[in-house]
Length: 358
Ligand code: MRU
Picture 1 (cartoon, rainbow, N blue to C red):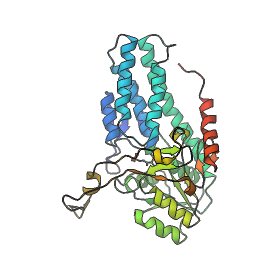
Picture 2: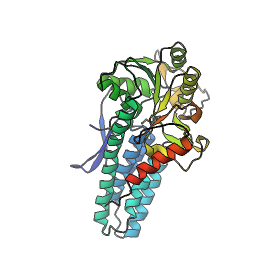
Picture 3: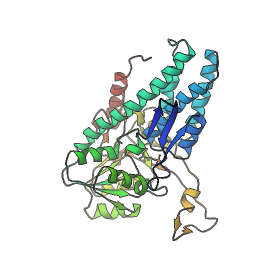
Picture 4: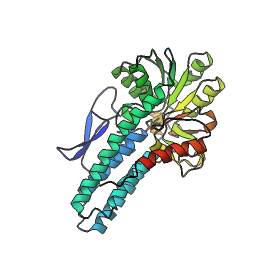
């Protein structure tokens, strides 16, 4: 099944519980948008595009839940739901982008009855989810062209089907190259503290028969300096107008070491992840998560950190554009100057979607 989807029989949202993988493959269902908000906050669902789709389906639930009998009350209920969903995770701009799309339907005055509005919100959430898969496939084809037969690829975090509705961003590029028959090998950063690389990317590589080795985050520099990496692919939670990229903590170090060693570094970024309102990455909000994510890891049956250890736990970092060789989007691979070329890619893709929808 897809990472997140609408169940048309039961009229609820279903998703794969990513907290339990790889040990347990479990599908969880929610019939209340507040539960969807919780699922995003607690990372039942994670990865920027998957979060956006989950929030969109959350809005379809909110529309179903609303007891409003007037248009004003309905709009007020849905705006309140959007606020709750928006507050769950601050860095991934896909969340705000998806909610904006749903609210545009809610306030579309061409749709008159509340029942029609409820249907229209669901239809838009389904369209957003379907488009995500289509966009990932387009990015995968553009990105796979950058991979040569025999390449060893470094990858950080999880950017596969689990981080999206289906297929994936950076791992989707790698999967496409593998399916095209290129002989590749992937080095997967385990990605502390929540180990999305070890838990999720390794599991996906098994599913899709992609040859890989799992490495500790600290080994990435060694493999790059010793000539054992040909190209790096990562995802992004938000890109600024100048091409700065926010992604999972540790991405910045990968990018700097890649540049130092002359290794190309490509973020794979749907245009929905580009925030043209932010001139540089310095304005991207960085989520700080609970210290328990760092202290409660156990080794040999015991917590790794000393009791009372003080922790800083930023979940993302910003990689300045000067380290970015090119940005793979559904429009194509965008090269510097990003302030011109990234805007052009985003505006071109937006223009394709401007036809009014019901
Ligand atoms: O905290 P997470 O697991 O949601 O972080 C995910 C990432 O950083 C991914 O690289 C990013 O969302 C882009 S991949 C689709």
